[in-house]
Image 1 (cartoon, one colour):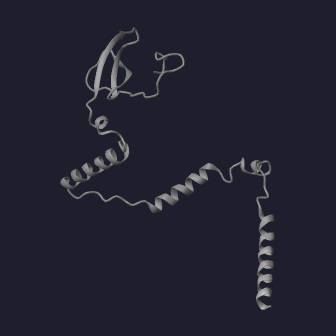
Image 2 (cartoon, rainbow, N blue to C red):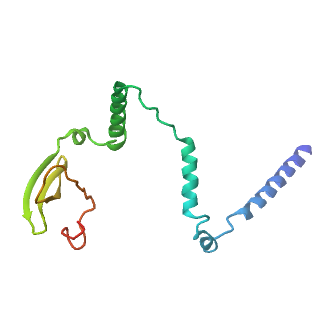
Image 3 (cartoon, one colour):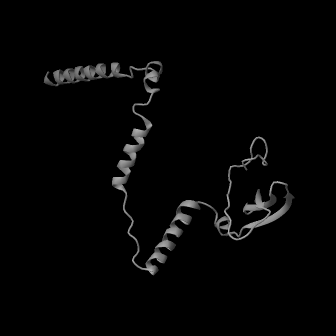
Length: 162
């Protein structure tokens, strides 16, 4: 009889626990929660500041090399890590080790104080792209340069800001 009572109490306990779990389903629906979440909890600048403070406490301060030889060794180690483990991670070795191939295809003279040199180049073996070099008509000494990777404007690649 004791065993039957124990089984009955155990079954009643499970039923009570199960009955308390069923009503605990999600009680909010998208329509009631969405308006509450559309506005940020705090300003973006505060979040950025807090994240910056958190990260700055955990950053490891780099130790500068003591000699030129140590610096050269460290620079080579960093370069190898950045190129092989990050920038070219997963790239075929043929692509990484291939020499760049550029071919000038045209020169367009303008009346704006510069000429345009059109190039075709191989990004990776078997994949070609194009580039345009805006070259001042009069060059002397060292001059600044701008590399624009944006691409073409809706009005074309001769748009004024290019």
